[in-house]
Image (cartoon, rainbow, N blue to C red; front, side, top):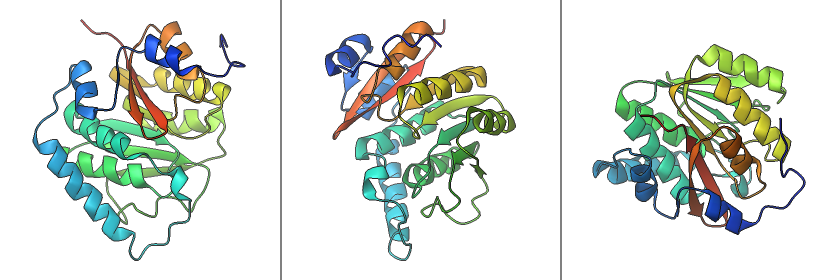
Length: 228
């Protein structure tokens, strides 16, 4: 691992300058990637989010709200899954399961695909519908070896979403492991890319195209290989 800027605080202007696009619009970001943003995605997302929120009425939330995915980011993830129609999605970090439930709703509408979710705690995923047939939960010790085992079990990844340890070295290691298990249409997504230079350095060393969604007080990054 070539830790180019691991000890430097990220300058937001670098994130802006080094990304292919910086936007607050999930639709604009997907179109930049060359993916369609269909009109029905917005109404489908609202229905999925409402169904998830109904589950919060009788379900104790064991993790604080600042663990939750930001509003525009969950809309982006929903549309990304709908538009790219992945066979296998993997995510690290589950907490209450807000993003997990949204991804599963998109997979259900696609009528195909599975989600492998990886965490270190057993009490995660309160918002996920019980016994969801598309959901596989992996509980490990947070080590690279545990991540390797989970991703090897998942098979070739179409989408990988990082949302666990946001330290520079942990992010870079997750990105690198996920890339090794990526399919020919692999998409890397990462929350909190404004915390360090990890996302930018990975994109540069792997020659990846990138886009950033600005959402409330954080940034969500997506990277992919240019394909002819």
